[in-house]
Image (cartoon, rainbow, N blue to C red; front, top):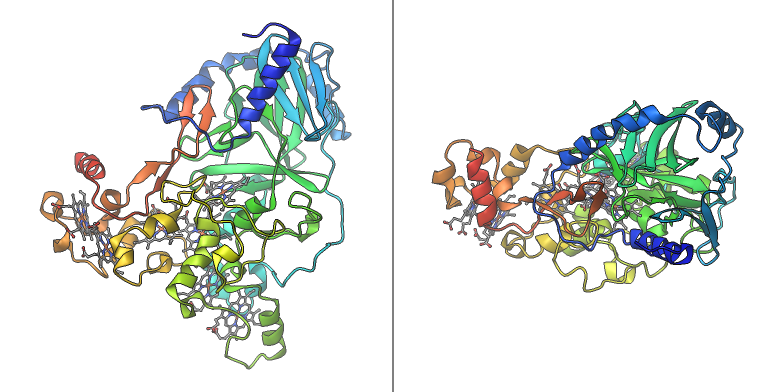
Length: 479
Ligand code: HEC
Ligand code: HEC
Ligand code: HEC
Ligand code: HEC
Ligand code: HEC
Ligand code: HEC
Ligand code: HEC
């Protein structure tokens, strides 16, 4: 452990920079038990008893400060340094290799988003609500999907994690650093206890439809930042966001256009890819990211209510297979740099390479952050020997999550049960689940979540459809 404050500070900053590697570089521990995390939390329960005064203030006084839009000032026991390069502040403590990194001055609170006029004209994105009056049934079904729900206002019913003690707490390897999720006046916050200091950050936007979990964003001026704590669906706990170092409290990871390009419909990026016009944000991946901006279509049909020919709108199934794949590929080929950093330029029919820098990382390994379904599927014989596209299995307007029987029916549109060499071994009911053997859920090594008790790797379906001996023997064990 480093000793002098300067070395310590350098060390702590190094740890924080490590936290920026959103994609963990470590290999999975063989048997990390998600539930070990929960156990670890309950062992720490007794910590809550030792509240008392924090830096000389009671919790009620800290709450009162927050209501007035103020933060608790930094106690003299902590070290704070501005980091001008990134416009952030670091807070640490002597002889502790943990630290805080925030984009606002310690003792202050984030600035509410300003009411700015857009810099660029919205190319015609309206959001799903605008389609409702004429496409009611598609709309009703669509709003249940992961696409629609993937980003939304973080109202209390849009945050899956608990706000009830003790489940609202996230402890770390350092007993003096922990997180608490709180609600005040219908607003949600992540509150950080860092030695004898407390600060909090609002939860403004929820990202993720809870396949794996949810992450959260907050506004500070015209910038968006990710909050430190995310929620994990499978183990139903709060956890460090993927790639964040356990023990740190990092609220300075700025959100760039690329993130919203995949998880929202539209936002006006101002002079660069991290300053936004707050009012321009259209949450959720709406109809228009697959069909193209809808303004002209809506204007036309409102003015011509008797026309029954869809005007100025693209139906992906009228495109070539390659083009259809690229519509989904905007967001399902892993993370890739935008050629125009302001984003939102891709239109159905376009080629990916005209908008993204496609690198060798889309090589077919489980991609970064996403499991890169497009690349994986493209290696399958089901794909190379047919004209199959994503929508052969996925109805884009419907939530079929978990319905393995529905997906298996899709297989049986081309295969027969008797084609499967394992049919006899599996026996009755095989037609209800072709998936677990041929498209197993596998931990994505490129997305790791550090917890107080080890790394967690969320599992995703491998879209390389093939015979997989390991998956087969695992499946047969469960029968
Ligand atoms: C004022 C009514 C109206 C609104 C609002 C509207 N549409 Fe349509 N849309 C129509 C009509 C009429 C058709 C043609 C009949 C049909 O296919 O249902 C159509 C057809 C379509 C088609 C199929 C086109 C084709 O060539 O087969 C798509 C896709 C579509 N609309 C998408 C959208 C989207 C996305 C929105 C929201 C941004 C939207 N529509 C809003 C009236 C509307
Ligand atoms: C603008 C980006 C974007 C486009 C375009 C897009 N997707 Fe997605 N898709 C996402 C994101 C982000 C998620 C993860 C949502 C979540 O769980 O929060 C997702 C999730 C999904 C899921 C998982 C559903 C579930 O139940 O969890 C399927 C299936 C899917 N997309 C298929 C498609 C197909 C097929 C296309 C093309 C027709 C497509 N997507 C186009 C961004 C996109
Ligand atoms: C993830 C991409 C995606 C999203 C999001 C999406 N669609 Fe579609 N939509 C498609 C595809 C692909 C087809 C062609 C369907 C096929 O071939 O099975 C289609 C077909 C259609 C059609 C014409 C055929 C039909 O099914 O009636 C309409 C109308 C339509 N979509 C409207 C909408 C509306 C309205 C929304 C939002 C409420 C929406 N879509 C969201 C991909 C999408
Ligand atoms: C290239 C597109 C892309 C980018 C960029 C991207 N994501 Fe995702 N994200 C996805 C897709 C697709 C999924 C669904 C899981 C999968 O297929 O890997 C997903 C899954 C997630 C999930 C889990 C959703 C769930 O339902 O469990 C969260 C949370 C998330 N992303 C947050 C973010 C944040 C925050 C950023 C930016 C800092 C970001 N993502 C950047 C495409 C993207
Ligand atoms: C659009 C038609 C189509 C669909 C849908 C389809 N396949 Fe295939 N699949 C094929 C073709 C064609 C081949 C190559 C010839 C063969 O082995 O029958 C193939 C090959 C395979 C193979 C052998 C792979 C290899 O490398 O030898 C497996 C396993 C398989 N499919 C399983 C599935 C499963 C499971 C599903 C559903 C999740 C599915 N397929 C959906 C058409 C399809
Ligand atoms: C218990 C796991 C398991 C299940 C469930 C299963 N398969 Fe298989 N499948 C296998 C194995 C193992 C093989 C290779 C058998 C061999 O070569 O002896 C195989 C082979 C295949 C092949 C390739 C035949 C060839 O050699 O080209 C196809 C196609 C296939 N399965 C389709 C399906 C479909 C469709 C379903 C659902 C109705 C299904 N499988 C369910 C394990 C499974
Ligand atoms: C042969 C059928 C098939 C095709 C084709 C297919 N998928 Fe899937 N996909 C599945 C199945 C099965 C699942 C698992 C569904 C579940 O567990 O709820 C899945 C799950 C997903 C998920 C959710 C993440 C996960 O791992 O559970 C996403 C995202 C997705 N698919 C995207 C795509 C995209 C994009 C394409 C086209 C490049 C595509 N899929 C093509 C069968 C298919």
